[in-house]
Image 1 (cartoon, rainbow, N blue to C red):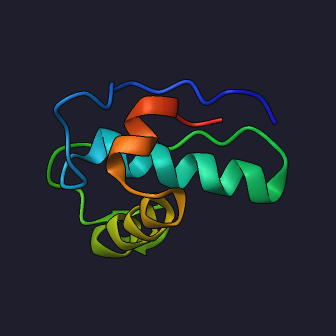
Image 2: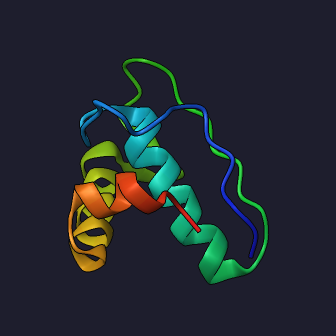
Image 3: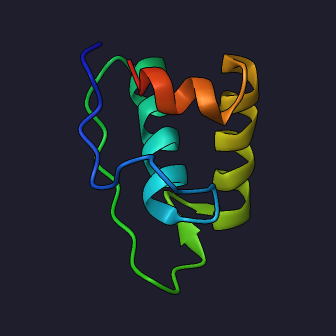
Amino acid sequence: MGNAVTGGGLHGKDLSKADVSVNIYAHIKAQELQKPIELFCAIGDEEIDGKPYEEIVKIAKDYINKLGGFEKLAEWGLF
């Protein structure tokens, strides 16, 4: 699958920022389904793609830990 196109950069961000966690989640889902994924969220949304926002953050955190940490993700981005 190709590169992820995201609305938010990783520099200076953390997983509490939806543009980081949701983009990571969309990337993972696109890789699993082998097709483009588009997700939208707004400030105050408690559920994204049928999942509680906290679950999206956990999925993103687990993915980052698997890569070797947030610094590695920021260094290489989503591929």
